[in-house]
Length: 464
Image 1 (cartoon, rainbow, N blue to C red):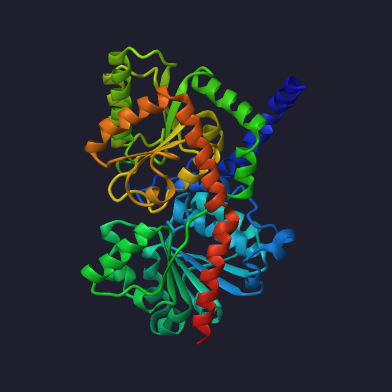
Image 2 (cartoon, rainbow, N blue to C red; image 1 turned 30 degrees about the vertical axis):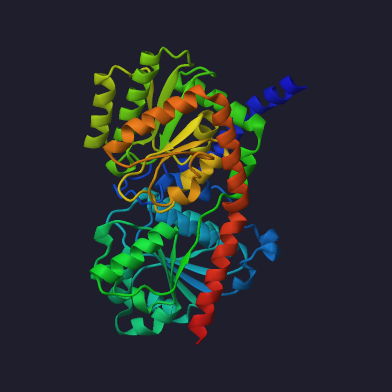
């Protein structure tokens, strides 16, 4: 019977994989290069299910905590429309609101002069879900902003739209603005971007660490006070959880991905899944991985073969940073142990195929880092930097192990790699604890409940 189920699953795996690749196909499988801001919510890791999932289906609207938003007009203003984390997270919220019957209008403040296939594809996705797409400028945009029950600005940069479009009418809109902030880099604290922040109904931020940083930074640098600020941790969708909890599907995906990488079933895979950039720390991860191989050799440990997987390359761009990564791999002669995978929305198959996730974002870390909770849903332990939102997700010693940022963290990360490679039971126990933590705190319904409380408060303020 078990063999029959596996055989059936092998027939189904192209369908399973297609479910995750459908959006990738529409968007030519490649996401545009993102900047090196380590707080960009892991761009495409967030994306893998955000656009594939149906979020809250209309049939389930009655049970949604967002049901009070039925018939409400919501204007969403995003600084850009791309496959980076911020816009995709906003799209997910748009679909959640459409699912309960909200009227949702989308505006993208910054678009390239030339036609863009990614923008076209994502706008088509919005339109398919019943989200109206308007031009960022003109009377239609202004009229919608004035009539909207709530205006949601996405990222700090979107603040430029307020003065550029609304001009003298901006004061009429500010009392109903919810500013959703994901950034934690110094250059975003620019008066041009955020001068209206103190006067909006509220700010919604992805982690307590980021919220505290914004509170202190705006006060010290800009002499401004933040408005009432709400921390909303993100959550995994029902669709992602269904795959993560389907042992047969995971097994089939694991076999397929490992076969494509040329690794054996019993090899140990440590993966970093982020757009390749210095802020995401792929260089330090590879240094730690090489050091872990040396430690294993020095201690003469008998272990399965260890492999490092870097998901998030851009084979078409071949950036200077990525070339440095590849040069390091060649110089250390570990080409057979390191695998570069091109940028993809379909990260679930890789989560099903690896043994440990490495979240190595540098600087102030991730604002949240959704890939972390996605990995935990797949019962994977996480080796993360002790910075940013990662510290609010990973319980050190229980669901994973934390290490310092920067070069100081390379050796501790190497030792943690060896530790999880040598202690199978610890690895499995941490994965199980991580899964339990996700079920307790980081599900889609948790996120919906948290967002619902924020939207209710913004509506209350806007009526005053």
